[in-house]
Length: 164
Image: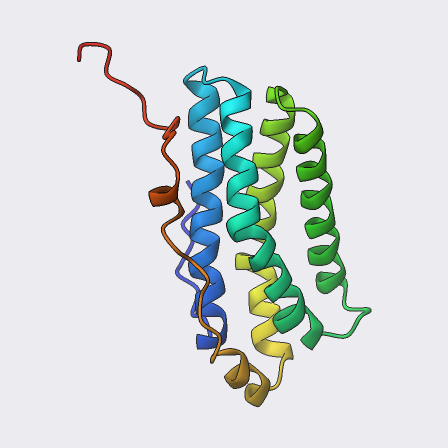
């Protein structure tokens, strides 16, 4: 098992990292639902809810507050923006097809890979390539993370005990 030492985050990126935790939790929920043979339609409904309530806002703020601080030709910025576009394409496909487990697996894998890229590579790059005063300005941002699960009744990712 690889040992990943904790990465020291600039305060400007901490709120984004905390939001990434909830994105990874979404990936886990999708995978749990599929492993427990939950209908793809139930999982899709939650994915669309989470995307509209959280990810869409998160992506917009990353693009406006973080990616824009890098040159348009920066390869890591281009990769991050392309990955956002791919996730938007997958959401569009999910909206059209509400019962495709393969699409759910693809979405979960793409989101997982994207978040890990941002955390392990892009954020380190931002910390070294963005001026300290610009990072300080970004650090005034407040996280949009809220407890979305309190707004969602179908907790498909929790395995029900059949003895009860």
